[in-house]
Length: 195
Length: 184
Image (cartoon, rainbow over all chains, first blue to last red):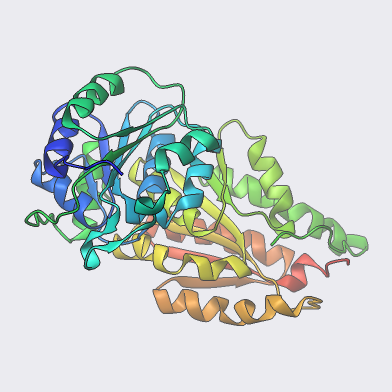
């Protein structure tokens, strides 16, 4: 296993700086804090629970809003809980859904216990096998810069990118835990009225 | 857990029994449902076929039932109404994911066909059948039940209205007696 040096916060900042209006869903734990640390926004949808749900919430949004790009930013632990979701998403074949797995190979929120991804489970390869249109594993911020450019190109189907990041917990940056508030402002961003 | 055939009975009740999935499809269309996700059940087979053939509805086949809860939530975030179809044995898979609609106070409509409660040949269906209503209630859902073809149409119609007009999380349990005995 090569040494991993990528800083998760810097990687997420690069992705979000180039989001270009994309709707962002975050998986619970560090990815939620990383996205909030890069700047709170009405079109961020933060999950604080519902482990395994992030990519599928993204699928539901992408099907409802084919005019928007949806980016799910989650962790290896969260996505491991929804292994089958990759099959469901591949079969649904949305062309406006990108999944970013911030892979530190550990369950960071619960004491850095090693996860499956440090023992040979590679989400980019799994996604490729089940039929995602584009997948890759990235190990440097330079590669993230290239990814940012690539994400601007139209997709032929769902895309998944694994960003191997350092196993560390940066200072927590906590978004609102008021789920109703976050939901209503996300929908308001899309022009949906709350009755 | 997928059924094959069910008894269709005879006479008028048989006609209603065969017609209710078609009525359900009409009701869900009229309620503005645009996404339907499912783990198949024989009791939902006709509704799944009709939905898949409907150009206005997006269908997602799931590998496990809780996926549908998350997709339904995303659909609502994006401004679309949806429904999740499953059999009672799949309800247990959903419990933690149901915190999404409960905690965000978002509409959810689940149609659950019951197994393990009426002329059930397979005892493995019974434990989750017994736990279905209790576990859904425990996580905070409102439960409605339909045991006749007439009821199921009316109950689903008003459940859709309660879910999407009043932001409720509702499971409609469709009795196994209505679905008929499975042929082995």
